[in-house]
Image (cartoon, rainbow, N blue to C red; front, side, top):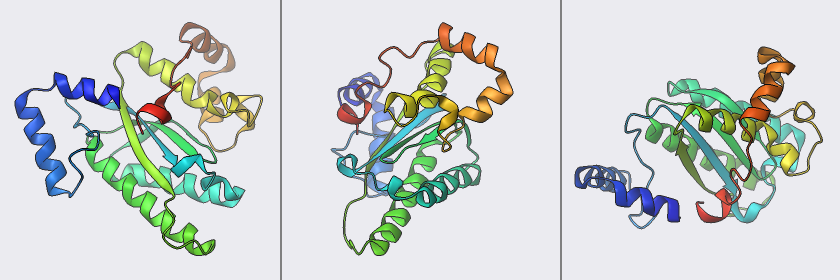
Length: 206
């Protein structure tokens, strides 16, 4: 929340008018931390969590499979592509290249809605809130970009689901290691450590 307020304070009057106009047009609440247009940025880390961190996505391996496929299939429909991604039982991260981040976030919101409706019907939980909301962070530098790739791929290890990146099937880690090679991947890991990256993303910003 504080990060969003800081960014808001840095915007010009015209930029604020554009954001509020977009939120009004799309019936978004004005008091919610604003999603910002690209403003010249192309790469964003998009993160979203289930409400109260309940493991709705991870109810079964099939649900993880289906949601991961739906997420990845949605991106090219909006001229976006995944650089790195990881879907966990109660949240997901995807580092995207997106020329229009607002349109992509809107599409992700619709995916959340469709998924929630289907899962609530399966579990006889009509009206239950499944997802909280999503947040996006633009990449500020090459170092930020590469540390983000490491952060996304390390997430299943960080949360204790697996011991190694490649043991978690619902991520791009295996493809990343195959393309880069283990030696180069290890160099990137050491040179661009995650440290406390993302420590409070799902507490302060969602």
